[in-house]
Amino acid sequence: MAKNISFRGWYYFRMGWGTYFAFIFAAINTLTVTYFLAIENYPILHEVFPTFIIYIIIITVVGIPLLTLTGYIHFKRTAAYRSEAAIGFESNPFVRRTLINSELTLEINQGLFALLLKMQKGEKINDETLEQMQKTQAEINKHVENRTIFGQEDLNLLKKLQENN
Image (cartoon, rainbow, N blue to C red; front, side, top):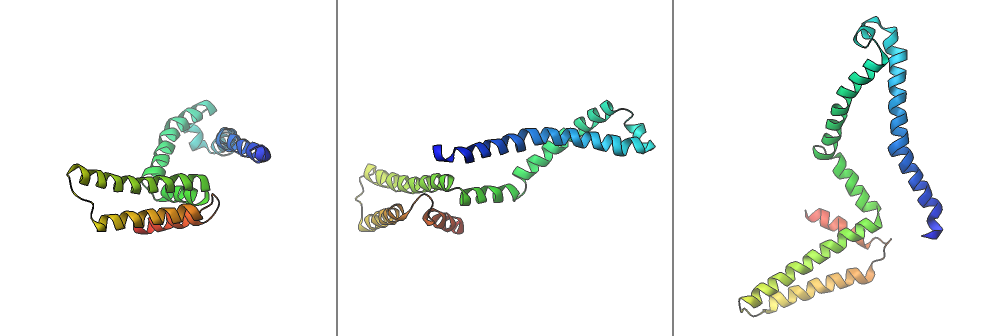
């Protein structure tokens, strides 16, 4: 991590700038420019917003709920955020690895639960069940042996899982 300190610093700088400073600066700039260059020059708008403070209050009261609703729609009602999340999984090998590991763990646990239930009922494990377990184990072993953190194996498995759903 020490060798990446400059990139980590750059990332933290960009997050601070883009998330906090630029947002606040852009809001102040937009309010100031729109009021003093547009509203003051149009008498009809100047009647609605007689002072800069009233303009800020009205824009805040209307703008915050409107922008919050827009953010909600972005995350919950459109495919835009799902696409962003998918890109994040595809492009970040650490997040992708965590997802793939959880999928493999889920598959193993489902098999174990099925075995436990059969054993609890006193049923024998038949050859078909053993073959399926061995097949699953071989597939997981092959995947785990061949993958690297920055390799394509996890990405290929992620794409395969997406196709099956």
